[in-house]
Length: 356
Image 1 (cartoon, rainbow, N blue to C red):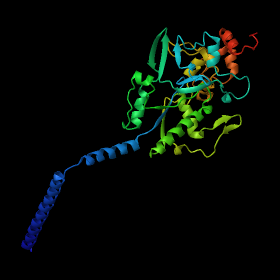
Image 2 (cartoon, helix red, strand yellow; image 1 turned 45 degrees about the horizontal axis):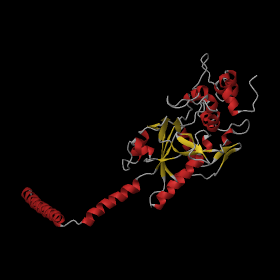
Image 3 (tube, helix red, strand yellow; image 1 turned 90 degrees about the vertical axis):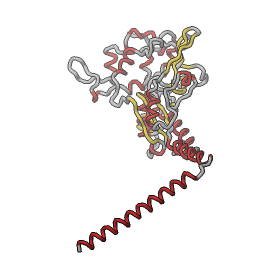
Image 4 (spheres, one colour; image 1 turned 180 degrees about the vertical axis):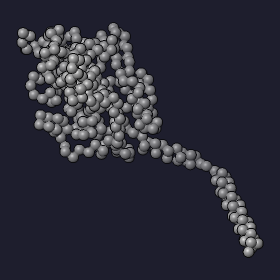
């Protein structure tokens, strides 16, 4: 029995070896046949076209929503007159000129809902890609937003797009891998989602017409993240005196694929308090925007920390400061309540009585 078993195993081994040689021969023949086939120019083009179509279909359309002061503002009836976004010799200086202060300040309301406040004379332009400062006849330019956002876009698209650190000249010419959303950053964030929705729909229709996935990606920074958060929850609806006014069946996934929020002040931002107390000077070469101007921006108040977060506290007992209590501001002469700004208050409220 042992001899027969050994003989059987030897026969099986020989058969398996023959089968391996046959398979190897067939594989070599197939490879040789493939090598001898002449590849045509159409074959090569077809490979690259297929890959290009795949990459195009996978690439994103990225909308960028900037933060405070990240969008140009200009006059509705005269777009060449820039209220915010052109500086220097020929730019506006609200700390020195009454008309400039009135133009940049959001028209104040003494009663009613501040979230509904509008500016009939000013509307947003595009993203502030380049800040231009004129000193005499010499223009100086600087990138308004750092290249980090282009890096975010490149990461979003898996390096499939032409995102790069944009040269200053290209930025000045309006070239950008980002589809910039302009909005009036002075107003309530709940009032500005209509601008975002308008740009989303335009981008969606362009992608649909090209046969692509119509959904877009959104990258937002600072105040822009709060505009996007409201948009994702309520769409173009706005907040009115009686609550949210808009569609109840809003579904952002129909238009938006993914969102990246950079430095979102979800719990409020204490640094905003400084802009309301002391004003804002974004750059040593730019004008000073005093507390009378900044106090007219509802968006800044919406970014203040709420008492429940206790991010701003009284030094003596550590309790939270209610930054939404106007009596606190008046009692401590904070911001626009400081008597040193009475002249500028008079520019904004020419019919108001003098301080007693």
